[in-house]
Each structure stands twice: as structure tokens, then as C-alpha cells.
Amino acid sequence: MSTAAQPHEVVREVLMGRFGQLSVSDSEGVRSLSCSWACHGSSFLLPAAELAGGRLEPGPVPESDYMLGWLIAAAARPDGHVLMGGLGSGAGPIALAWAFPRLRVTVVEIDPLIVALARRHFPLLGHFEAAGRIAVVEQDVVEHVWQAGGADWSLACLDAYRDSSSLYCPSALLQALHGRAAAVWLNILEDAGFDATRHFADVLIDTGWSPACVLPVNEVPRGASRGNVLLGTQAPAAAALRGFQPFGALDHPNARKADARLAGMLARQQPWMRIAAMD
Ligand SMILES: C[S@@+](CC[C@H](N)C(=O)[O-])C[C@H]1O[C@@H](n2cnc3c(N)ncnc32)[C@H](O)[C@@H]1O
Image 1: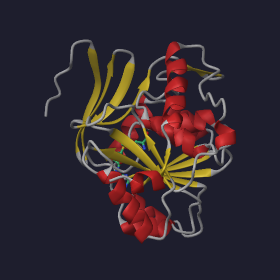
Image 2 (image 1 turned 60 degrees about the vertical axis):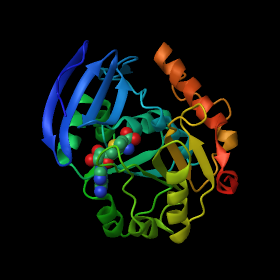
Image 3 (image 1 turned 90 degrees about the horizontal axis):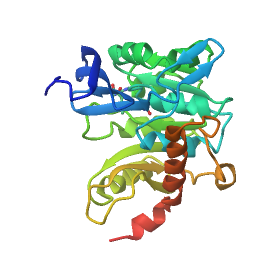
């Protein structure tokens, strides 16, 4: 583990968090929050968010591609209430709040130091908290779902990672969400095939859910590591997503690239049954 800055990297803050050393740094126009070697979210500094109260950097465009998948999932209920397990830098919740002005997001994060770093270095998070659009709860996500008795959600985005190994998604969490979330989407880190996705599909089925859709985040050559794959229990809302350009109002190449990457991800979606039938 090293904190040595890469060439052109500016380290803004380093802290010892619950799961390892946390750092926020800027490099090549991107601000990232990392825990040891694992990136827990990154956003483009530009385009900045131009708001009535001033100009905030980084802006709303996530650099981590899989976070665009949350937008695909949320398009089914743009006026709903999203539960997200794991805050990281807040890039995903920020993109959701930006793209869907009537959406509310509750994010549950176990490490208070991550919350503090995200608020300090990703100021759009604080902006959306002050506006009542994003609520951040400092708690274990399983404990939260068990304790938030009366709450229900249009969508649960499960993305609690301690490091870059495996998604924390115990059966108890999926069971507790059953009947309380209309849909569940998981961010899964894959190797070359779909083995991890199959594992989580089995966990979904065992807990009463039906996997419906697989969104491979990246286009990868056969045999190469696949990277992030989103697995959801609801097919994306085709009509709502036709021509969907969540960052279209921002006149900047990073915004155009994000919209194009989102369209590419949407084109790669596959019904779960097709993956299940593969050898
Ligand atoms: C990849 S980041 C989340 C990124 C975020 N979902 C987004 O879209 O921008 C993973 C986060 O999960 C948090 N985490 C790990 N275990 C957790 C748990 N049991 N409950 C809540 N958060 C947890 C980590 O501290 C880390 O901040």
C-alpha cells in the first residue's frame, strides 16, 4: 500500500478509515476517493455544476462507468425513492439526484470518515442533502433495512464494498428488502465470465427475487476480465430510456462521453435468462 502521488496527481486528504487508508486525490481532471487500492467513486471536475449559490467542482458527471447503470435502473421510477448501500465518494447518488429532479435517495454508509470526506471533497453531495434530495445515514446497510420498519423504496442499489473483492450482500439483506423494494440492482465485480453474476443470481432466487436483467458495464474482448456487471430484478424502462441523455444540458465533452457510454451500456443489456442458459 502506498500513498505516493502519481505524476500530475494532487493528494487532497488522507485518513485512516474503517477498512483501510482513505485518500482523495485529483488526477487528469478526475477527483477520486479510494480505500487502499480500491476506488470508491470518481467524478470529472468539469463540467462544474453551475448553481444559484455558486459553482461546484467536481460536477455531476461520474467517471466510474458503472454508476451510469444506476441511472438506467432508476429511469423506471424517476419520482421514486432509491435506497443505496454504500456511499463512497457519493458520485452515484449525485448523478441520480442530478438526472432525476423528483427522485429522493437515501444512502447508507458504514464508515463516518467516508461520509466526511465525501462531503468535503464532493460538494454536490452537501448541496443535494441541504435540498432534501439525498439523505446520508451512517449505519450498516443490513441493520438499516431491518430497523427502517415503515420505509419502502422504488429501487435498492446494492454497492457495499469493503475493498475491491466482493459485494457485501448477505441473504438477510435481500430477504429484508423483499416486499419493501420494487426492484433490486447489484453492482458485481466479475472476472472473465459471469460466475459471480450467477452466484448472486442464485442468492436472489433463494431469497424470493427473480433476476431479470444483466448490464455488462464495459465492452471487453472474449476472455478478458469483464469488470463491473449490474444485475437487476427489473428490465430497464425502454420507453423512458429512449434518447435518454442525463447530462445533455451540460455543454462539455465529459458530459457527452458519459451520455454515449450510458447508451453503450444500455445496448449491452441482456435478459438474465440468456446468461443463465449459457454454458
Ligand atoms: C463502491 S463504494 C459505493 C459507491 C456508491 N454506491 C456510488 O454509487 O457512488 C462502497 C462503499 O460501501 C461502504 N460499505 C461497506 N460495507 C458496508 C456496509 N455493511 N454498510 C454500508 N456501507 C458499507 C464502504 O465503506 C464504501 O464507502
